[in-house]
Length: 292
Image (cartoon, rainbow, N blue to C red; front, side):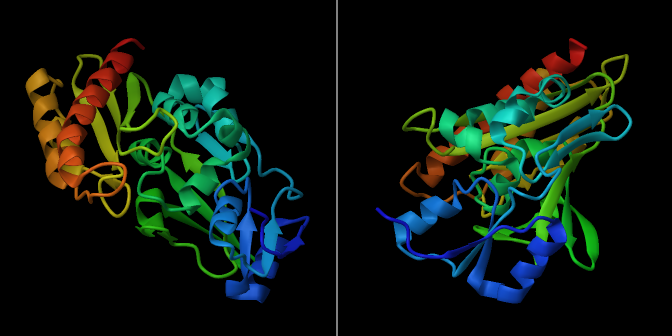
């Protein structure tokens, strides 16, 4: 199917891009990789009057890491780049796993982590590991920037916290710390490249005695937005993580899930499987932390 007609705008700076989005309002959409936007346009036959491409804006494809400041992912950094980045693989393994599991090779080479978040799909693969790692987003407009925790960025299916004339410039993850491990688990009933029917990311940090210093458990595709299970973190922190605690944390994940039934899975199936995935992710995260 041919795409509907639209005018493509190619600003050279982030401020120019924000100005164009503010000027054209609801008639304009930004485009990074385009894998969601162009597909939607082709499927529905409807297009915004203006597409604001970001490819000419310098610096947006950067992925930077240092132990003091953590990880920064630019708005144009592709899923494939993040999945293969050695610092992401070493220090944020759940994110590397999720980026590598998203869609197909072709989509990963074009699609971006930022676009995966801005699409605000409850089943976005990168959302649970980014939540588990305490990610923040830097939102840019001509008047300046604001920083928002990722948990506050998602407002509902297909809805995010971006305001008119505002763009997600960068995703930031704090330094991982010593003896920290993370893991991502997903499942789909139809195929490996299909959208996740349920997903879980876990991150744990241990002290020298094996006591859990901090923990985060995040769920995808089982609620209107990706979500953190704060009760599970409270259960695990301050003590060794035993099989009994893993089981109890997984049960809390099941309780927190609010899935729906759709073409990919029933709500009952999602409720059942989310506990299994949570237990797997927690055990794997603990093993990675102990291996450091």
